[in-house]
Length: 325
Image 1 (cartoon, rainbow, N blue to C red):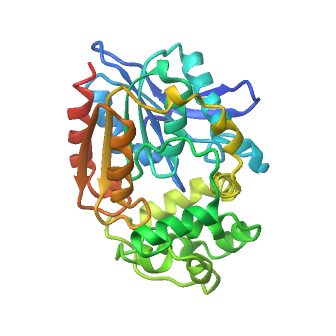
Image 2: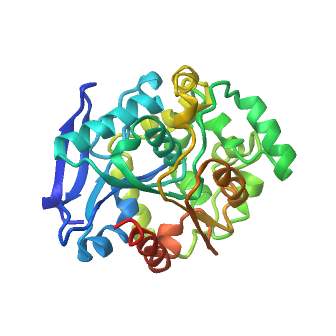
C-alpha cells in the first residue's frame, strides 16, 4: 500500500487512528477493511490494490492497539461500542456515509456491533472466518467454552484464557518466535490440538515450542510483520480478548434494541474449512438465523484466507460487491 495514501484521525475519545485511504472512483462504493489479531492494515495487502484498480474506495485502519494507531493499556478502552464509535469518527472525518464492511477473525465482533448500532452507514457486510454474531448481554466465558466443547468436542476458544492473563504479554513477547509458529503453523490441525484447548496455548508459549511455518508465511513476512507489531507490543491486541473474556461488553450489548439484532442488508460469509478456531460451522449455523440476505463461500484454507487464497477471495468478494452497486 502506498504510504502517501495514509491518513490519521483523532477520535472523540482522543485516540489517534492511522489508516490507508483511497477515494472511490467510477461511482463505486468504499470498502472498510477491519483486521483481526495480530494483524494490521497489511492484512489487506492483497485486497486493497485489487479493488482500487476497480474503482472502489478503501479505508483500512490499524485498529486500536496496533501499528500507527494509539494503543492504550487500559482494557476498558477496548469495548466494542467504543471502538465502533472510533470507526464512525473516521468515516465522518472522511465524509464517507456509506461503506461495505469487511472484517476478519475477532474483528467480526466489531463489525457485528457496528451493524447493530450504526446500520445506516453500511450497504453490505462481509464476514471472514467468523460470521455475524448477535449481541450477548449475558456472555460468560466459562459457559461459552462449555457450550462449544459440547458442540465441537473441544474448547475452540480456550486460548482466550491465556490471552487474557496478566503474564500473556511478557511471556509471548519473550518467546515471540514460538508465538508466530503457533499462529502460522505448517499444519492447521495444530490449532485444534495446541491452541483451542484450555491451557494449551500457555503450554506452547511457556515451553517456547516451535515448528515449521506455513508455506504462505515466509521468513520475510514474519520479519516485516514482527517489526510493525512490536512497535506497540502485544498488550493492545491482547486487550481485545481480555475485554471479551472479562464480559466488559455485556452492559453495552444489553442496551441494543431487539429490532437492531436482525440484519437486513446483504451479507457475505467466507468460511475456512481448515480453521479450527473460527470454525466454519459457527457461521453456517448462526448467521442464517439473523441475516435475511446472505451469500456463503467456503475456502479450502486455514484461518488466513487472505494469505492462502487471495485471488479466490478477491473474486468472491467482488461477486458480492457487484450485487450492492
